[in-house]
Amino acid sequence: MTGVGAEDDIPLCERKTVTDFCYLLDKSKQLFNGLRDLPQYGHKQWQSYFGRTFDVYTKLWKFQQQHRQVLDNRYGLKRWQIGEVASKIGQLYYHYYLRTSETSYLNEAFSFYSAIRQRSYYHQVNKEDRPELVVKKLRYYARYIVVCLLLNKMDLVKVLVKELSEEIEDYTTRFNTEDQLEWNLVLQEVAAFVEADPLMILNDDNVVAVISNRLQEGGVPPLEQGMVVGQLTLADALIVGNCNNQVKFSELTIDMFRMLQALEREPVNLATQSSKPGTLVREDSYTLPVTLYEPNEKPAKRENPHKYLLYKPTFSQLYTFLSASFKELPANSVLLVYLSATGVFPAGRSECEGPYDFGGVLTNTNRDVVNGEMVQKRNQAQKEMHCLHPGDLFPFTRKPLFIIVDSSNSTAYKNFSNLFGQPLVCLLSPTVYPKSMQDQCQRGSLFTLFLYNPLMGFLSVCGLSSMRYGLWEKAQELLRKFFHDIGQMIMSSRVIDQAYLQFYGDEFLRLLMIRFVFCCTTLRLHKHFQEAGSFPESYPPLPKQEMVESSLLQKHVLELAAMLDVQNLFSDGMLDNY
Image: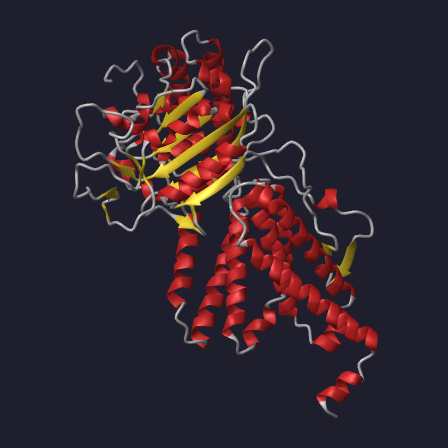
């Protein structure tokens, strides 16, 4: 029987089923591929497009579940094809998380990625002589690992890395491909990323405990009755990573990864909220929703500030995102700019120094970098063009601006000017670290570590690499009292710049400012931090004597050091070597 004759034997209704499925499949691919053409900045341009894409994938997923038998018999539907649809849905949720910063969508992405593995959708791929299908499987693993890292599912990450390693070995053995080195690099990157945390917290069974560093209920000192603070809200954050040789995975440096979590609340699983009776269809002893969780066009109050993640951006890219974020910043809102980047230093001093004469931080360029610092430019009469100077941020001080600079030239941003009278704060990292600490910079900056997990930062400067969970909890309790006292000092100070009080009403900014003071106090008492550039600074400066050198805060540092039996590393009196 000819192929045409065989096709004539197919009932019309079944033929229509196959035709409808092919249409939905083509439409879904078309919409998904269009996502990469959407502008990464701005909100209105992409919101409706994502809505249409979610809608088509909802129909496609539901359709293949309802008509599986016909599609198996008449279309020859393979399990890896179902896996590919599920993987695209997982990607869709992950990209929506990147666009919105709402961590709930990470859980949705995880649900689909997890189902692919549990149902072995890609299991048969290795038996087919098609390397491009194996690459789909490898990419799925890499994306699944990213989502698990962001959800702190470290035990699962280790299992997935082992499986990915075996898959890569099988792939490179069977096919003589040119991308073997690339996939081995992926393995090396994720292994280094997992090992970047400087501390292991062990429970009673000597099992490593996973600690979440996102903002949790009760995790920030509350506003007390009678406190007068600003009504500003952190709405947008630009997280920039351009440190040379720092651990990274999937265009996220370890510093970016840490700051990203410091600006998020603990995720809520939406599965129980979005699924209604009758919307689950049983398949292979595992269920997934027929109707995907589709985000509202106009969501309720945003849980987390919206974030742009910029890995090694050029100056023009960085300025484009800054401008777009500035333009769309709502009223009574704050823009946060976090710069983790290699320092660019001026070639010489000019007679009249301005905001472009102190250098700044590196933006992406193809120029050579030696020992982590920019090679000096040949023409010393010109300013470095591949650099974000303090003056470049001046136009954005027309609205409330909160800046964090973690760089070897962070002090360039001390030379700031508040030209428009809006709330403005710059938190600046140390520029010099003790020799014992310099070897660890590849695993992430100490300053960012303090802002992300202050207790881990404290333990890191004390050289502690492991701790019992019970002692960790006791130290956290002492830290809570410490933070409460810092908050009281900020609110009661008569000489502190009003910008700090304006930002204090926002929980994320409040916690960052309090952790910054904790970092300052700790490093000023530590015996290994002695050089002039060893301490964090800020603009406007915080009052030294009544805050970062406060005897009460120093007493808390020494109490924490005694609890951890490292008091020999700290001076027990006021320091005067500034």
